[in-house]
Length: 130
Image (tube, rainbow, N blue to C red; front, side, top):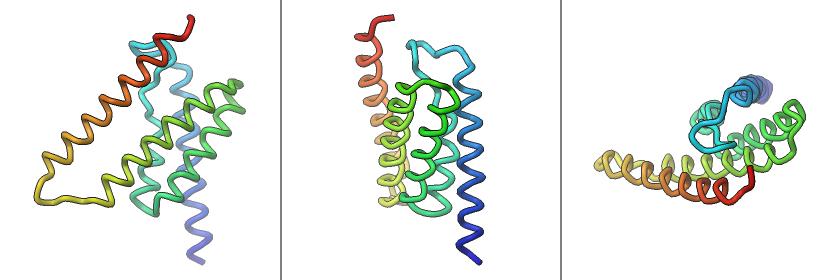
């Protein structure tokens, strides 16, 4: 009984994530060509909070695969899966090491990691031909 509910909730989260991915692909890029805001990762993060990292990675994988099928772009699958997997890995580490005594430090570490990911993606997209 609980397994069916879990599969249904994960299916809903995956569907919402896929819908957000497709809508986001229709929007113009941000400051960097090809970069996205990652709104679809909100639903993967919800799966991480509700269930476990394995289910969150499953939502990311299915969203990336189906997003590539519907968007028709194989390279978007690689970028989407990489970005989602890194996001879920960092989020799961941050959730597993809850530090109630120093929430400001935790936020600063998260902001710093996001900044590092931004720099890595900026170098990747700036070297690519337009």
